Amino acid sequence: MDSKNGFGLALAAMLFVAVLACQANTFIAQATLTPTRTPRPTFTPIPTATDTPTPTQTLTPTPTKKPTARPTAKPTATQPPAAPPPPTVSPYEFHANPPLPCVHAGNTYLKGTVYLNKDGSSRYVGAIVALGPPDGSRLYVDPEKTNENGEYTFTLSENGQAHPGTWGIWLVDPSHNRKSDIGGPIVTNDLPASDPNSCWASGVDFWK
Image (cartoon, rainbow, N blue to C red; front, side):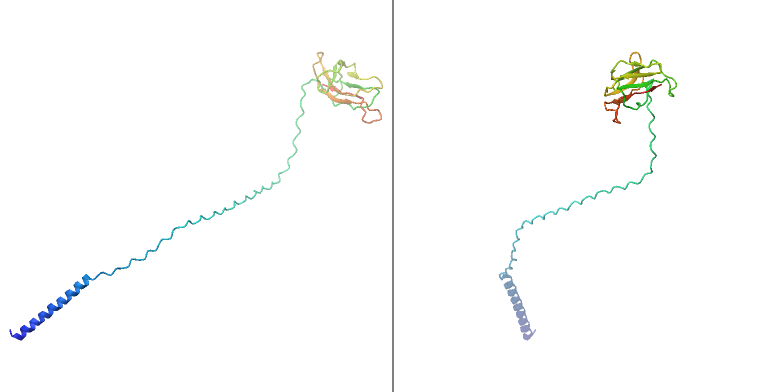
């Protein structure tokens, strides 16, 4: 090998070493540099939570109930009138007619006839007739018996005198037990003959 080539190789080797040394120093310098402090992010305080007022509850008005319309009544067919109840059957043997017309007389008396049938063709002779209040609770006077014509008479005042009162008349047996409906009431008064409402005389007929 000649000296020129050897010198060139030596020089090249020295340059290579120098480059390596330079790069090593640069690496060490970079490694030993004081690291740059990265600033921390600024702390942003979290705002204190404030109490959020509860919203006022709005009351929903209760709907007013509408009145229920009543259905219009449908016209109903006209019903025929109810038949009158059958007449009550009397438990007594004899029945009383309505009182006879009440008229003015010379005195107050009650008079009538007792029949043994409905058509009035037979009269009851000796029937016992009682006089008392319209409820038949007691006797005002002793009973009267019908005469041969089946008639009775209760004379209640003297001639020219009135005897106002309310009367009931019925038939009894010899023991004074009722044997007929009660006839009446008959209301006598003391009005004069000139008054159309004068009532001094009346009576009740009975039939079997």
